[in-house]
Structures are given as C-alpha cells and as structure tokens.
Amino acid sequence: MFKKLSSLLSIDMAIDLGTANSLVYVKDRGIIINEPSVVAVNNKTGQILAIGEEAKKMVGRTPAYISATRPLVNGVISDFEVTEQMLKYFIEKAAASGKKIFGLGFMPRVIIGIPCGVTEVERKAVRDAAKNAGARTVFLIEEPLASAIGTKLPIQEAGGNFIVDIGGGTTEVAIISLGGIVAFKSLRIAGDKLNDDIVQFAQKEYKLMIGERTAELIKMNIGSAMPLKEKKEMPMRGRNLVTGLPEEVVIFNDDVQRALERSIKQIIAAIKITIEETPPELLSDVMSNGIYLSGGGSLLKGLDALISKETKMPCKIVDDPLTSVVRGAGIALENIDTLAEVMSKDEEGEVSF
Image 1 (cartoon, rainbow, N blue to C red):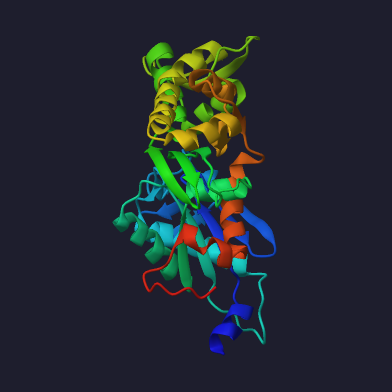
Image 2: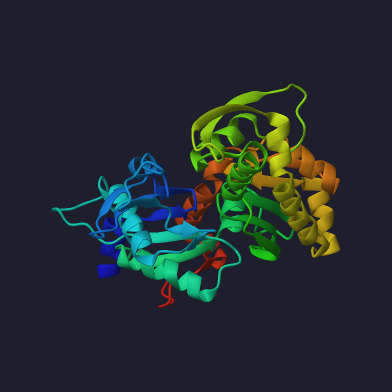
C-alpha cells in the first residue's frame, strides 16, 4: 500500500549526466532542464556558489580562490561531493513543481545514462551520488542504448542497430540487437578533445593562448571534418605567448579541419573496429539501415559524410541529437515493464516502478 502511494506522489525522472551538459526529463512533462555540467566552488570555504548556466559564465573569469569546473571527466565522476551537489540541485529543481499532497513530496525514482566502458566502481559512484542527492531508487542505462531508444530504433528486435553517440567526454560506438549491446567501443575522444585540439593548434601555429569557450565557438562556427567548398574565417582572440600581450588573428576553416583531423580519424577507427567485431548477419542489417549519429559532436560539419565515405555505409544524424540520450532514458522510464531488461537495477535489486 505504501509503495503504491509513494509511486503516485513521487516524480520519476531521467538524467543524462553528461561531461558538458546535463539534461533532466520528468515523466509526463518531457525535458525540463538542460544546463552545463559546471559547478563554481569557493575553495576557501568549500561552499557551492553556482551550478549550471550561472557557473559556466564564470569559467575562466574567477579569482584564484574560486574554481568553476566540471565534476565529470570523460563521462565519469571525478569529484564525488561536487557531483552529488550538482545532482541534488537538478533533482530539486525538477521536483520543485512536482506532485505534492498536503505539502508532502517523496524522493524521486531516477534513471541515469552512463558510458558503456565504465567500471563497477564508477557505476557505484553514480548510484551513490544520486541516492545521496535524494533519489529513492536509481537505475542506470548505457548511453548508446538510451540514444537508440530515443531515436525510436527497433532495439528489441533481432536486427542490427548501429549507433555512434559523440558527447562531450566520450564517443560511444555500439551495435544493438534484442535489447542488448552486441559489440561496442568506448573512446575518450569527443567534443572536449576537439576543443582542446583547437587550443593546441592555436598555441603551435599562432603562439596564441586561447580559452576553451573560444575554441568551442570556433569549432561550432567554422569547424568541419572534411574540407568545405566555401572558405570561412573567424577572428580568434587570446594572449600572445611570446609578448604576453592580447592579440587577434584570423583563423580559417581549413586550419580548423587540420587541427581536428587526428581525433576524427581515431573516432572513425573505433567505428571500423566495431564493424569488424560485428556478426555478419547483423552487419547485413547495418548495411541496409545505416549508421546513426547522436550527441552534440555529431553536428560537426561533414562528419556524417566522412563516416559514410570511410565505412561505405549510409550514415545519418538523428533528429535532435543533443537530447537523444535523455529522451531515450525518459521513454525507458515510461515503459519500464517492456524495457526493464535494458537497465541495471540499483544495488538492492528492487524494481519498484
């Protein structure tokens, strides 16, 4: 009786705990939070000063005693206490307008997307952080599975579904069939690494120190995986490493493409390795259905065309690739009876949905 009552009162939510951005999906309401995974901390007192959008504005602009950092690196928790505070902030914000009766609110049931290659220790860290942040029951779902569900791929059928999820910290390459991952490759090269490639290129070629946000803007505006037909340029401002003075130079799309080339090749190599490990029958399905790209990194200009050229298979970007993981986790949340097999239970092993 109590379980049924708490089920009616609790707010079920799905969280895509990303390296770059965190999204929260609330059952029957859709995506209600999409904020950067950034936390600003006062190092003297340990006090959390800002989380999400407000904290991102502080990156690179704080005094020495304040650090605005990401508590997740390469898709896994690097700072447990700060991640716990960030999760608590997102859960409380999502629950603020939730169901309450006579002022009572019950701890939510949460499903969280995680990378494929994480260890059991890293899985436990996510579970513990979510429970300490206020979750009653925690389920984990691997990001390629969640992304495939969000893309409405027939993952529970006996057929090959090839998904490449390029996030901020990791690239997840997976073949899915009958509700499970048949072959996968998890690569710690994704959006953040591409930003760093541009930072390193600016230092090497122009002796210019630029920030991460500047590099990201350059990647989004003129970055590409293949040479573009029309030439594009963009001003790049930073500090000259020789003179120590501020300087502005113009960077062209060809330069950015060269800067990203090595990392893009590694992503394509991971896709090819996964193809080699795929059973022939499933590979036949993939040749017909093609490769699906999701995640923010898939929006890099020409990436789909380059992957198609290198693999000799059709390649398409899914609709709204930035939200496919959290949408898929949300669908799993709303169809727990039919999709329970794709999720791992919390350590008590109790299915209370």
